[in-house]
Every structure is written in structure tokens, then in C-alpha cells.
Amino acid sequence: MSKEKTAQLRKSIKPFEKSDMKASTKQLLNTFPPYFILLVLAYLAMDVSIWLTVGLSILAAGFVVRIFIIFHDCTHGSFFKSKKANAVLGTITGTLTLFAYEKWKREHSIHHASSGNLDKRGIGDIWVMTVEEYVEASKWERMKYRLYRNPLVMFGLGPLFLVLVSSRFNRKDARKKERNNTYLINALLVVIYTGLILLIGWQAFVLIQGVTMFTAGALGIWLFYIQHTFEDSYFEDESEWDYVKAAVEGSSYYQLPKLLQWVTGNIGFHHVHHLSPRVPNYHLEQAHESTPPLQKATTITLMTSLKSLRYKVYDAKNKTFVTFRDIRHLLSDRKTVTE
Image (tube, rainbow, N blue to C red; front, side, top):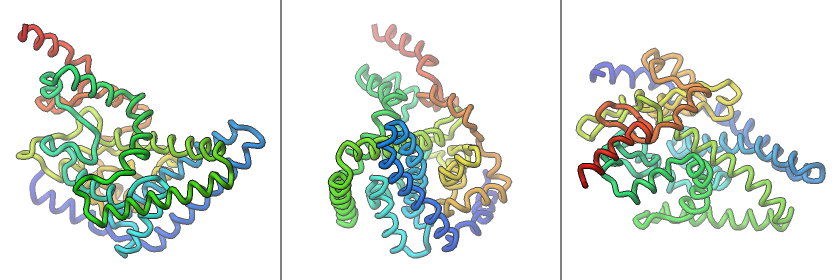
């Protein structure tokens, strides 16, 4: 893409970068009350059926995903015009979704600044090895990678690691503001969760909160995974890497049914979001529909997205994701040469 076309594309999306107080308020009203109502109903349903409680908790998880999208917008400073308002709401939504606001804000900004850059992987993204790296890796490293990319680990243990470990501790070089925000959210969680356990009992708390947050976490990881892991996703070395190409070619358009699109806060328009993180989630669809070049992004549906579970390693030479089976012969060849 030429510099002229790049400049024009960025210019065309500029009008959608402004937050709308009315739209933001509407989103808060149609997200928070239903979420809390579902949690109360899930608790009351325990006298009727545990399975009804589980079902209502799963529905509540959908609203946790939606709350996370609001949290996500706050980290980009796009939900409100006020920086302070974004920080306050971000801390509140971070507490509800179990993510440390300032910590995640920093890591996610790095993800945006380096997505698709082969030389800057490792912070705020999913672990991706190239074919060359995988073949040259030790057996232990390959085993760790295979376990990491296993769906049962990624979507089963992944949510637990994110909320119980990763989001609860600061990095060693974290600044004071980031550290204090993590401490604040952890303290709020201790107070809120202690109060809930005393109010409804630990069994009800573990069942409802456990099912809700685990389901939401698994869905969140899936959304992040599918929007950057597709056959012809964009990855380049630092010398060739381009921000706009990484946004439009390295982020998918996840075309979901309208209900799921609403629940996931339009994050399926991920190519638009990566091109301009300042676009609030409620403007993403309009930006996509109003900008023809953006409509050329790789489109993935619910059915075709399942194929991406097969993609494990990135073939930098042929610019495509491949399966472990596709490169099995390379490991055999390397073993033969070594012997």
C-alpha cells in the first residue's frame, strides 16, 4: 500500500474516532443492569435448579465480555473524551472483569504497536513460533509450545492463568501508577468477594462467579485468537513491517450474527480497531461500512473460524499459518542430518 493510499485510509477513518457521550451512556445502561440482574437471578435459581443457575451464569458471561469491551475502549481512551473518566471506568470494569487496568493498558498498547512484527513478539499477544524457530527449538521448547497451542490448555487453563496469575501481579519494571492500580483492584476484589461470600455463601459464590468468569475468559481468548490467527495473516520482519498492513491484513473481520456482534461489542471489526484504536466500539461497524478498502480485510465466519484451531506455526517464507502435521517432515529431516 502506497504512502498516499495509507494517508487517505487513515483520513477516511478519522471522523469515527470521536466518542459520543450519548452512545457511551446507552451502552452502559444496556450492559451493566442486565449483568447484575442475571447474577441475582442465577443466585435465586439455586433453589429451583443448579443447571438453571449455570445457564444464567453463562448468559451473564456474555455481558462480562461486553463489559470487557468497554474496559478495552477505556484503555485506548476512546470510550469517553475525558482521560480521567476513562481511567475511573476502566478501573471499575477492570475490577468486574478481573483485569488490572493500567497493567493491561500498557501491554495492550505494545500489542497494537507490534502486532505482526516478527521481531517484537512476546508482550500482549499469543505465542507464535515460525516454522524455522519450531524446527530449530529443543524438544522441551517444542513440547511447551504444543501444549500452549492445545485448545484445552489455551481455552481451559488460559482463562485461569489470566485472571488468577497474570492480572494479579505487577511486572518488575512497572511504574508506580501501574503498581498502585493493580494493588487497588486486588484490594477491591478482596473486599467485594469477601462481602459476597458472607452474603450468599461460598458454594453459591464459587458456582456463579466461577462459571461466569471462566466462560467469559474462554470467550475472550477465543476472540483474541481468531482475530489474529488465520491462514494468510500478516507477519513481517521489522525491516518490512508496516503498521497499516498489519492492521488491515493481520486482523480479521469476524462476521458474527447480530446478537453475537452486539454481545462482543463489535470487536469482530478488529481490522478497523487496529487501524485506529481511538474509534469507540460503537462506531466500528459504521467505519467499516463507510470505508471500502477496509471491506477487503479477511472475513471469517463462525464456521470458517473453527478451521483456525488447526493453525499452529507461522511459515514466514510462504506467508501462511501451517499445522504441526505440515512440518513434521522437516523435523525428520533435521533429525537425519543431526545423526
